[in-house]
View 1: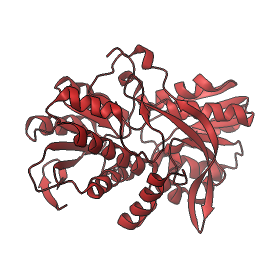
View 2 (view 1 turned 135 degrees about the horizontal axis):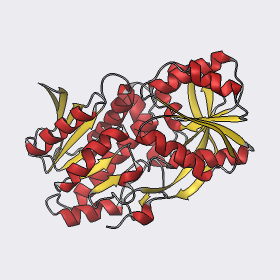
View 3 (view 1 turned 180 degrees about the vertical axis):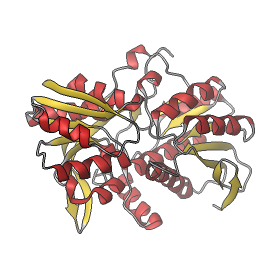
Length: 377
């Protein structure tokens, strides 16, 4: 597959494929500024799967949303109206997803989410053309609450940024955590100084801390928390303990337990091949986000092999069948097009000088989401 580059006004676009495309995909993701590593990993995982498929009939146009909702909306409009894409994907942040997905699906486009899974799109706001290939936002946090119960924690201090995914995070943890809450604090999105919040933790009566701070926010918090001398155990979702983040955090993350639907040591042939090929292609270990991009592309490929995208009903049915080998192992969609899957507890360890995660148990098995019953499709 040949990859050409075009400099466009909104940023860099990569167009994969030179033959007449049967399916045109618009990927809007974060490739610059805070959180760029997440979008880069989604992109790289997605494009690896496209490359491995050997198909030259899938064209992918990639644009940088700069983590700005207005930019994401402009890019989506251009992709739908000018680029004439059939499928959209790529968005990392839930506030951007809420700005783009409803309008895209209302225009008859398919949206495959490799990351953001806001509750508003899982329940009453679900749509037959919207598929989430990662998780519903609450899921990994629900698993963290379940793990905290098994660890014997009785009183948790909760911390998350004030945006849709942050609110979903604390909602999810509280849904499964059986203990009491010491405090529930929302920070600014993109915040990097956590002195005030750490002081509140120090003064609290909590016996544990649950936090959701993705990307650079998590790096800043963990480093400052480790330097603070506060020794309360920390639990979180994979988003703050993913492969790229761990190298920046370093030893401060060792021993922390986090929850994820994927890890590099999940024992199945598809995952082993993915980890090996991703390292060979990009020279780094894959992250959770890379695995989600890879699965999203393979879901798309499975649908392209089974149906023509111009036949929306047939293409939708092919997506619903999810007939592909997921790196997670068993994978299926629930009635609201969100995954039913196992979520693991992972511990941060050091292997051959590299900080990484290893699975230490199952937090929730064959888990769905709390909003599926509200979805009427």
